[in-house]
Amino acid sequence: MKTKFTISFLYLLLVSFGFCNAQNGNHISKYNKLIDSLIKVNKFNDKVLLITFGADAITAINTKNGIVLVDAGVSTGLTTKYREIIENQFQSKKFSYLLNTHGHLDHCGGNSVFSGAKIVGNYNCINEINEQLKNPEMIISKLKKITDEYDSKMDKAELYSEEWYEYFTQKIRYLTALNDLENSSQIKLPDSTFKDTLNIDMGDITFNLLFFGKCHSESDILIYSPENKILFTGDLFSNYGRPSINENSTTDKEKWQKGATWIEKRLENIELIIGGHGQIFDKSDLKSFITSIREK
Image (cartoon, helix red, strand yellow):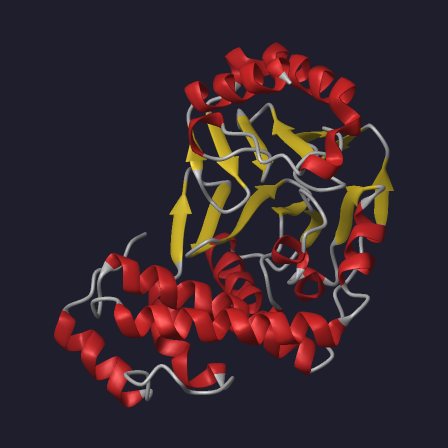
């Protein structure tokens, strides 16, 4: 579901919310109408819903025994909006599982919005989250610097251009994460972890989880839903199958090879590939990733 805007409408929005001047502090509420208008909803079928706001993404799958979520976005502020959309689309408030593709904060910052769901991640996920939050003051300082940088980029970009929107959504992502930290909002840690594999049976839909090995993060997992023919790859690769390898995480190369084989066995039954930031990949991207991993 994509919304188009006229320049005059955007101008009125921006003026009314004081956004023509990019230096505006951390009061997100004054941008709410513009934020809401930029949230995109991609409904693949009556059971699968992908919600994105720029590079922020969350997928919801409606099953016989409740809604299963993949990732939770960067912040409680944005994810609260996503939750409302999901509830309206599926006419349900039963959230059964939340699957964190890895422990980076931009994928689990909104975990607490789904406090009723059982949160699942790899066994390294909890330590990874805690490690990132050891020094909140340092993170706050970094987030302030990042939001200032996006303010500067917006000032230089052509108003209402694709580039301007990209900078705006990125600024809001980091700004809402900053607000969470400044308000001491707690990131909810996974309730349940697994070491190598885990299968979740929701009655009509199943989810096969595999720990790929330390790669982009310490806790990267693949999630496959055979009934929906969907593979969730987290941040393991980007366009054209470029691996997102943290060079400090090359100790699990043997696991990577097993992960590549695991994907290949399911390749013919995969029709939709969703990345950690809402990217829709095709099989050529996936095959290129497998080749790159094998070469490693």
